[in-house]
Image (cartoon, rainbow, N blue to C red):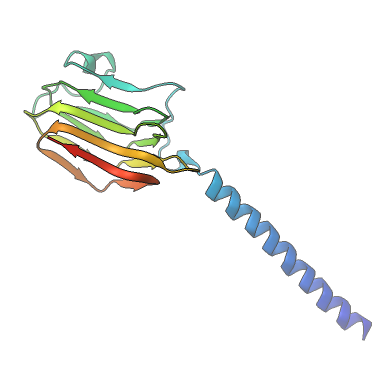
Length: 166
């Protein structure tokens, strides 16, 4: 008789331990998302892409030349910053933003593109992550832009995902 009670207690204790460890694992995974699972290329700390004229594309050594047939390609970056990891304004070159993880955006956002009216901007297969604890105010801002192709992106944890202004 004692053996049956011991087995039952042992199974119950094992089940409780399993529940506790599963709960701890889930809390850790939700609280501390592993960004590198999305993108294997992690950028150095404090790295941002700020482009304010056509020549700035060359500073970053992006592939392409900015023409319609060979646009600059911004890809495979993981940039976690509190103020716009990518900000592009006042350019006349063609460019593509793809396969990146841009995160935090706690105070501003993660992508800011402005004053780009003459060309096509392609933005696809990116992951945009807001602040994990509080959510972020803004995600992606397009100001005075036209011809934007925005598809197959993941956007998480923003109060306002888009700011579109002409």
